[in-house]
Image (cartoon, rainbow, N blue to C red; front, side, top):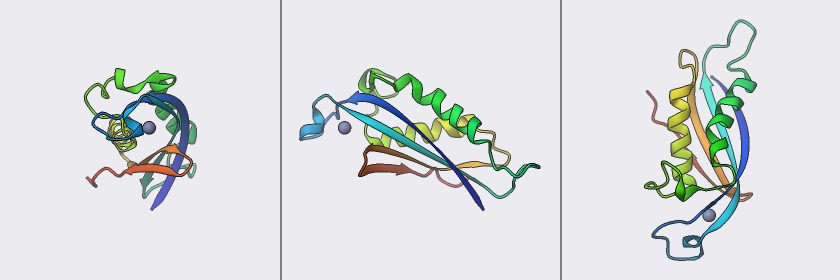
Length: 125
Ligand SMILES: [Zn+2]
């Protein structure tokens, strides 16, 4: 199996609802998102996916979060904007957007800081 990953960063604010502690208050992160896709077969020129295409798809999704307060944006008006839920949301949306004949979303990791991250792995089809 092959895996291909791309990363993208953005800055945003959030406040965790129901959290007892500092993260309940409005604060910001320089988020980093890593998407890994997986598949068995390469295309005729030896690629699983084009890095540029995958990164563009990720950028398209994440750009709307940049320099925004996540709690004000769909789907985080309801869904708590935790790193876990961000990874879940991005994984689910990316899964809808990628060309699925050869690849699937293997994982999405969201870093809030250099040392704290959450990963979502969609269930195998
Ligand atoms: Zn936070």
